[in-house]
Image (cartoon, rainbow, N blue to C red; front, side):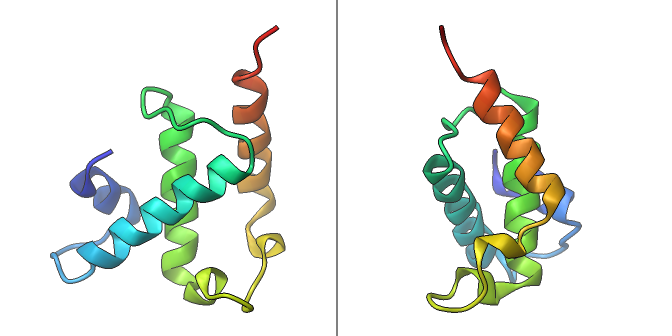
Amino acid sequence: MDIEELKKFLRVDGNDLDVVILGYQAAAEVYLSNAGVEKDYTNALYKVVVSMVAGTFLENPSLVVMGKGSSESLSITISALIAQLRLSQVTI
């Protein structure tokens, strides 16, 4: 997902926060990877979850600072979507 698409989702105008948003996108990708979700920007749900997690980090920067916040601070909705992504990527 490119920065412009992510900024539209986050409703951010201008370029002042581009570096921050890209950092949060990368952190969201790592968060999902650590949760057992493979990176897949062809999956619309993956894109939405990355956007939601990046948005959560943007609104609550303490979540990405070591020792502050916790994964429990992410919404139940995001956790449920992550579970759906994990299940959709299981191969038998």
